[in-house]
Length: 155
Image (cartoon, rainbow, N blue to C red; front, top):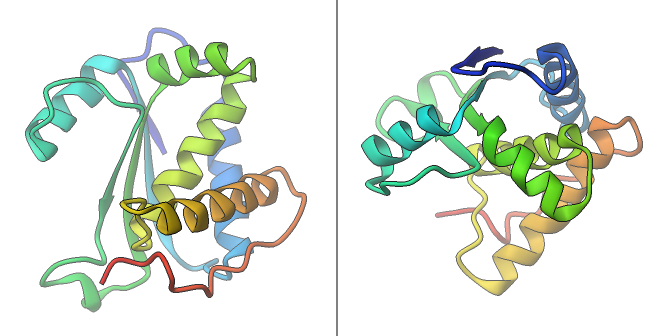
């Protein structure tokens, strides 16, 4: 868990780290490794441009380590979730929610991408949103998530 480019943090890094641990525990992935970077719009803009060819900031990026040639070698290493706190702050204000709640939502969304979920179709979006809601609840200590549905996994 790290921060880059942030002048101020709306919450302690440990809050998101603890929520990530609860999400992983809810998915019965306690031994998985996950890297989280909280950054500013300039940093995520650069990453989005360099790795996705999109020359603009975004809210969350996920860089999966389980994909590609070496992915199966260490399946416990999930990858990196990068969250722009600048965008998180704006989106939280627009939605009328706390910044930490929006960051938790983005973390869950990114984590699901690391696990192979996507939202290219309406069905995939429905499954991913339901799982995101479950992960957010688990992050707050409310309930367990069932990640057994392969319906929205990328093939």
